[in-house]
Image (cartoon, rainbow, N blue to C red; front, side):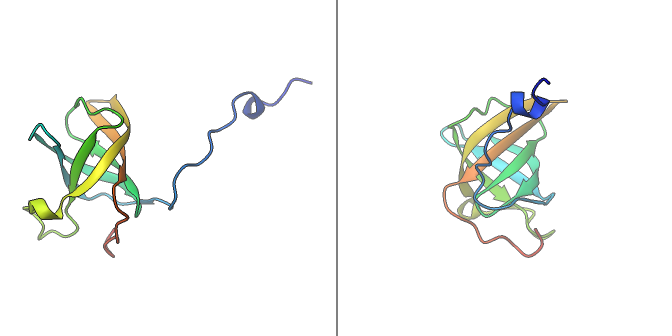
Length: 115
């Protein structure tokens, strides 16, 4: 009897330290060294990282350092530079005119209750 398909293609080990939860919040991303900002939203988030969806395809690549501003409330229309979170791009994939970017935060974050 042939091996089951899952035995032929085992799933990679889970690398996340904390469970992510769905949270769609507006964001802005600043590319270090470039000064460009990109708008988007979170798809999911944890204390250690997030999956971001940017409104335009970008050239973000794994290993790149970025800063992420997350709007936790409707009052956070303008995010101060000091509230931006340093993050490293882990994975980046363009699809359907969007850029999906997985990041890990440089420091563990206390998530807002609205996340």
